[in-house]
Image 1 (cartoon, helix red, strand yellow):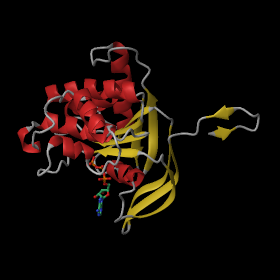
Image 2 (cartoon, protein in one colour; image 1 turned 90 degrees about the vertical axis):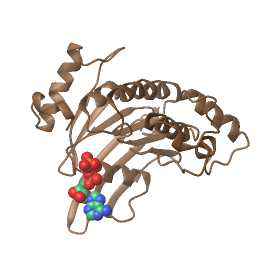
Image 3 (cartoon, protein in one colour; image 1 turned 180 degrees about the horizontal axis):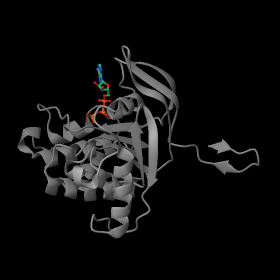
Image 4 (cartoon, protein in one colour; image 1 turned 45 degrees about the vertical axis):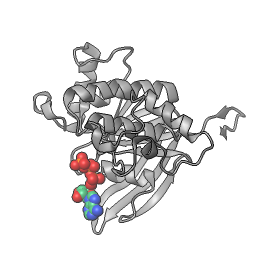
Length: 250
Ligand SMILES: Nc1ncnc2c1ncn2[C@@H]1O[C@H](COP(=O)(O)OP(=O)(O)OP(=O)(O)O)[C@@H](O)[C@H]1O
């Protein structure tokens, strides 16, 4: 908690990044980047291929061992990460994958509850290779949620799924978010996915956050909706993409 000079108490943000630089050798990828995420806020990050989205996510997750960098990063104690591939251990059953490294007296009960939440009740003894790609991503979400993160980092979590499965996963992620309320940073190439899921969309360009767009939509969010189309057009313009070029995202 922080206190304003006037005595008003406000929540500290979930994420605060100041002047972040990250370079691979001579190649500076992030350049004076500033970013704040509020507690319980769902933010999507768009940017052209190679713009540094994964580099930023890895910096937040504390996984950027091979990068030179400076800047200030403040994240909460409990951070979970979901990647494009589920990264399940093939020799561990589903429940053991969910509980990996989790030390809690009621871990098993929590693991089973998390599996039920992602629609995999009864599958706890299955092996990862017995599950479809979409089901494996459900397990990855359960593994993240069972840790009750204050910040969920997701790097193209649905990028490898077919369109229908992806839409189902959107509904699931939004529902899990509504119930657990972590702050979320979702990296995606897909403008429609960003609008469908996030409350704010950021665009990473030339090493910093070059544009931002609030998604002030209520209820169901579909590409047929007029306000959805308005936000989409703005984001595509900020990305420098013509609306007709974007059939496959950025
Ligand atoms: N380990 C590394 N060594 C050297 N350069 C790297 C390394 N990882 C990333 N880069 C470079 O850093 C830049 C940003 O990469 P990054 O993966 O963060 O981009 P991205 O926006 O996530 O791209 P994409 O959308 O294609 O996944 C790229 O030019 C990439 O080649």
